[in-house]
Image (cartoon, rainbow, N blue to C red; front, side):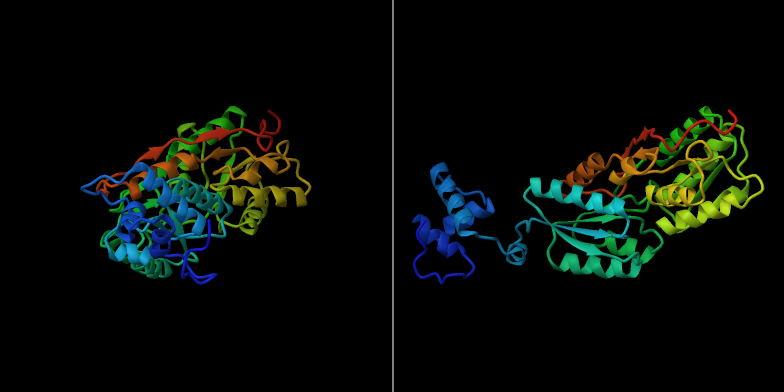
Length: 348
């Protein structure tokens, strides 16, 4: 297509440029690109000509201008509590793919594990006229943020926030059934001394997994001594240190349940450093099934998060045109994935 008359090379294409290139009015171009209904239908041939010209010219709508006109900006805001966790990197990719399939672009904010910063980001993304907000990670340790989210003018949906009602819509994984599946698996392998290591005092998924661990172990008639449960930050180093602490015990656990794959992988590394054979000497399991879990040595037994299904449900809820209700909390089932890091208890 020849360059549009009067347009400078390298300048940002406008609707006027598209109108000149296609020979239709600028108002028609505006209606086609915005999808605004018209009293007199626009011919399909005209609609195709306008869309093809917009693509060839590289036209990009101005989200702010669209928002000021009351039209959808096609922007989805995403605030991530901890972008350093490999699990959330995969979750962000899944959200971006789902949003793009619906014609949306993602505006990403990283809260650096700070609820205060998450609160500030909420205001920033709302001011940028995002059509909706997704929050990835636990945020209930900041009641003011919950109130702020409830009072925003746009839909807000939280994911991996835990299943307890916090006043905003959430899409969660069934941490209870996932953790119970791991404990059942270890008990079937003959393990009676089972430990747990993860961050203590968190309100979201990890706390639910620890609570489910205690309930499941007790349900099998086994004890959970306090020393068998260790506080550990959700890092590789945190997992390694937790294993060192548990191995110092006179009667250390024969299996350890980690509430994330990151912690479990840190344990695997430390077990190798100590000369332990996994799973002959010690069984280790995780939760999430991040891509790296299949490539550890041995492969990590873990719980597969239904990430794609959760993202689909959350995006449907966030950018749907129906009212988002705070009491909507779908709970999706995870799957146990057995690999080589778990085996029969020593001597069994």
